[in-house]
Image (tube, rainbow, N blue to C red; front, side, top):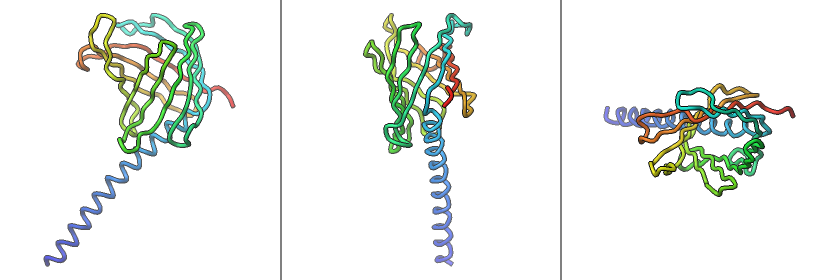
Length: 177
């Protein structure tokens, strides 16, 4: 009887561990697919939003991504000619930390780090100080994802995440082969 209970317990624990591992594998697979689907050139329209969510200004630009390390690290750049802005980007998976991360830096030298859970569609920036010295944070959420298009919504908080205000809405459309 004791032996049967021990074997049953071991099978139960093994089953739970396998289920947990399957979930982890799904999260990793989803994040790898995010990277794979980002490879290529994209036309992007960025709507900068007022606090009420209405569009204050729209600009067009491009993003382009290519592999540095297949299925783990992408290198990219973004250009918004109307704003005279070029940004370098790394987009990568941090397997050990169970995170997907993107970093970007532009001509101003400011490094932005946007981190989210492996398998997720949302990333948070590091905290930073606003022009008037208040702490703030950005949140990026990828939505309406298809093979040829997706959207990114950025909002921000100045109260530690109690409330979020709209920042921008980007619409990505893949450029042909």
